[in-house]
Picture 1 (cartoon, protein in one colour):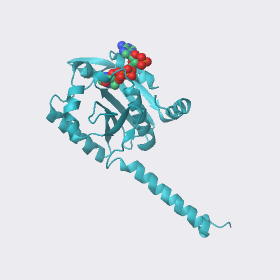
Picture 2 (cartoon, protein in one colour):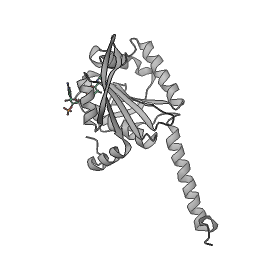
Picture 3 (spheres, helix red, strand yellow):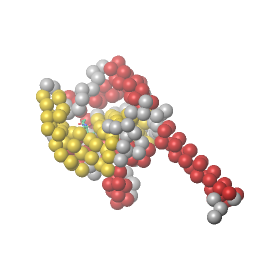
Picture 4 (tube, helix red, strand yellow):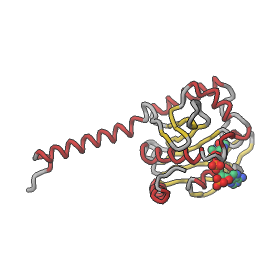
Length: 222
Ligand SMILES: CC(C)(COP(=O)(O)OP(=O)(O)OC[C@H]1O[C@@H](n2cnc3c(N)ncnc32)[C@H](O)[C@@H]1OP(=O)(O)O)[C@@H](O)C(=O)NCCC(=O)NCCS
């Protein structure tokens, strides 16, 4: 019978290295429940929301053009503070993450990227995003989106990332198409907004598609 690898000194070193790597992997993948990492792109940083982001998020996300096709955001600073505290609790419980979008040279959040599990363990998850309209069309979305999607696939180990956008939401659908999501169908009358049921487009990205696309664009954020 061949010696088992851990029966000689080299084997023990290998085994220790394997255990250390496994521990590191476990730490990396579970750390986000304690606090989110800071992700740095070419235009923006993604980081944990802070209570002090509440006034800027109120100014950025509560306008009619931003909120038209999304679940109604809070309407007061206190409401955003409660939302931010809730995001921290849901992250700690391992159900959900919400990143603040902070352009380089600024301190406060101008938008958010959210990912929530649709089944325990995040294998299927849903993402959503909103950015202040002053930053639309600037490249901030794509920069942040690539980091948020990387995080979903690489760290929280999502396999299938869904997004829903009201069919009438031209920018939302355009943004999802641009980031490489695939349109799977239309969810008829699935979203109640201002007393009216709206159709939504279901968009998905699979981990394998994302890795393939990244090998083409080389992980470069532009
Ligand atoms: C969704 C959002 C984050 C995207 O950010 P953005 O900066 O507007 O996105 P971009 O400009 O990078 O990309 C949008 C794309 O849609 C295109 N687009 C704009 N209006 C469009 C329309 N009516 N129909 C189709 N495509 C449209 C744009 O031309 C752009 O594509 P391009 O860069 O190839 O020209 C931002 O618009 C937002 O916060 N909207 C309000 C909240 C929201 O709707 N969230 C999405 C819920 S699914």
